[in-house]
Image (cartoon, rainbow, N blue to C red; front, side):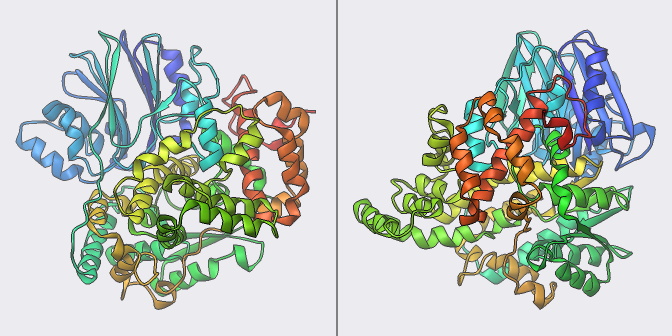
Length: 628
């Protein structure tokens, strides 16, 4: 795994600075290539072929094609063999060089060959064209900006911000979506003028005409095919065995994150079956009581499979890492699990350089409780007139005036499927955002995000497709990428192997949520491989004691960062609403903590990326961003 960057002019200092600010992504080798029309940079984390032959940027024999690349192509050996038959000569054992020669042979169509996680940029010197690509799921990030005929791109947005022409202006649509989803979906980022390359897209930029063309090269579409649950379970297990096997490819030590839940246990079971030695497993828990410490399950799994197990317990003051984490995140992502994932990554890096993780299983195989709730509510929504639903919800409001109950009222009074979905998942409802922002954020960009998914498909298919294409790539996978790469640790995701995803798209939703059981068909694949104690567990997310922090240790810091003076200076939010959250906190800690945590994450991010001229400092603490 690595950090990449580049632009369409020559500037050795800028490209060096862009590589340096991403050095945590690849501390093993630093490389740049500059010419009159191009500057490419690379920070390498050596995983395959540790020799100097793997150094990037890398070129072909006549130096007409250059690449800077971040990721892993798991089927590169088979592609390499085909290219060798066609006469291509290789000087290394890397997957990087396969990309160069595949582009030479197949042009833009080369991306359809790759099974892996990747973001790369090719400079075609003969055609004067940049070819910039992100993988179909979006495991690896890639940001870019085109301003005044200048193209600039990088693995992390902070590298792009080093360019003097890039202004740090807030994209209000992205801010609105952040308040809804706790991240910004789609191609927008929090900054005007900087975009994300979306999953399954490439950007072709012609340096002669100074024009860029965005094109979707690949996608995963739901195409349900009838078959038995037993047949699909068998197919899943076969595909997952191959997916895990591919991800054991490494010239450095590897292991797995083990939560003791269904997905990570299954991955460890498949790893142990294919490894010649004990799998290194890593777990984490909070010193905050039973509800926040699940290490008893991970320890049970580790003993069951006889893994080389390592566990770490997080102290109460771990929230002090938030400024460091927000620096690594690039833009505000208010994911509760960012802190434990960051700490677990630091802990695991002491033993390994690669870990396998369980992301993707819930979105692909129906693992969230909200799927059950909305599946049950949908018939009521379709058959019960809006006027009746409003009467029922308003009657209940006579006895309960809490914000949480108002959200329930809004849910029952929704006018569309998109509306009631948003009422369920939004951290701030539409009504709450209007009060928080005094109407300063116009439009409904969150509706624009979800509307395309609620078409003629079944409600379950719609929800899983939406989560797979928004929440998974731009929250969950970004959280994992940024927190692992902060410690030069590569995370691999077997559930997001192309073959597994294609198979998941064929399975009817009725086999994913059956007998009111989440991930029904996936559980069938695990049967006999995962101990019954884990197999029968209910889904249990990673509980983080945010509401305790905000009530005690983090209370003073939060009030300082979200003070009236600070909020009014920032100019986005109404402090009266925020003060109401603090005043009523004890009435509904879980509900209010979600909103306060979201606002706190934004303010911490803003003080790092909006208020500071120097954004190169990565070892930040609250003392560095609290002003006297």
